[in-house]
Length: 455
Ligand SMILES: C[S@@+](CC[C@H](N)C(=O)[O-])C[C@H]1O[C@@H](n2cnc3c(N)ncnc32)[C@H](O)[C@@H]1O
Ligand code: SF4
Image 1 (cartoon, helix red, strand yellow):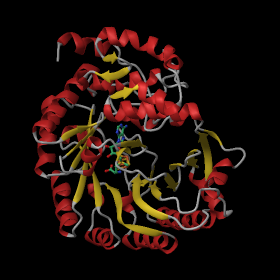
Image 2 (cartoon, rainbow, N blue to C red; image 1 turned 180 degrees about the vertical axis):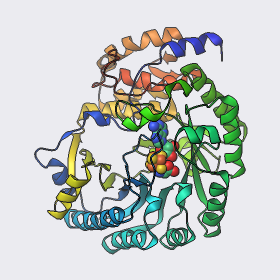
Image 3 (cartoon, rainbow, N blue to C red; image 1 turned 135 degrees about the vertical axis):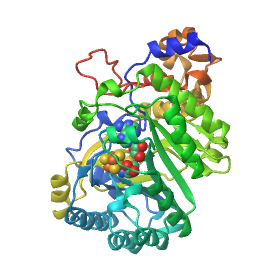
Image 4 (cartoon, helix red, strand yellow; image 1 turned 90 degrees about the vertical axis):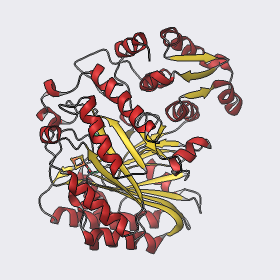
């Protein structure tokens, strides 16, 4: 990459949404009229479903954590919560008309690995008692290597879990100490041996860059260890530092965080390292082996982006279960109460625990398609979009004008209305997406930042 392009990209490092959805989550509205429940109740019979089950508990807070979670040292709150989740599954099954097949189940958090084996079995049994789970269904769980036990792993295998995502973050002790996460390499190594020993073969690992004390050498050393463990996929996330939203991030000494130029260099060094080792780049932060379904879906044009990041999931409806969980139907997004007491209150009142919704109108659908294409493939053909949605190119004249400065900078080309991000400027993709985001307001007011920076 030319120094010139690097410098220009660093100058345009604005605050932009992550685009795991469009419209982005800050634009969801309170569901005053119980519209979300109506969307669930009127879902066409036979619609295939994906389930996302959120477990918002951890034993110790990692200072960098941006997830929706709560610290507990006791098991009682988790046990109580599992029973609420099971009741929510009953409520959903009663609300949904007719039969539905489950094509994907994803347990996320928080730390779903804290759920005891018997409780995990309870959730899976309850899902299977109401729905048929496709033989080919992907059943995935996010696991903190500090929570692995043989009893739990055996239960995951027995209940059909076939993908495990391990949170590595970093293997460097100085970095781990600075983020309040003690996690020696041997825990991940031994946990993985157990997981593979029980026949769970598909493994993802999460690594973060932008954490305290990291530099190119330390992150490459972590990635080298990660590759010794031979995962199918690596998620190489840029740390989103948003202390105004997540107060515990204030525990991080900002002076120890790599500056944006170093973050940029770590990202590119990490990408080159993973590519050289045979991992293909998927979007802005995923890497997968050539025979992994994620890479195959990139190749055949079926890659999608959703709240879990990049996914092969083609299912028409995603149902979020648990506090704060987000789902998506053809009508729009649905988010459950993030607040545990309100979530509990709704379930005990035999109500779907929906707090917010975001209806998807035709304009949203078109823009979501453009943004998803850019996020997944770094290119979008506006002629095709216009043809498919019966639009005229002049409908995008504002956006095409707004794109021009970025063309001059060399971040993007627009040839015959095909927009393509320069391969060395892929970290600018969210900024380019924001041009097509009708709700986006550039955040020049430093006192009220809402999003993390692009780099
Ligand atoms: C729910 S956590 C993973 C499961 C488990 N709790 C663990 O920590 O191992 C999901 C992933 O989000 C990523 N993550 C958490 N906070 C983040 C942040 N502020 N910015 C970017 N990625 C973050 C981490 O890589 C983490 O593994
Ligand atoms: S990174 Fe994982 S273990 Fe750490 S606080 Fe967040 S959800 Fe919990």
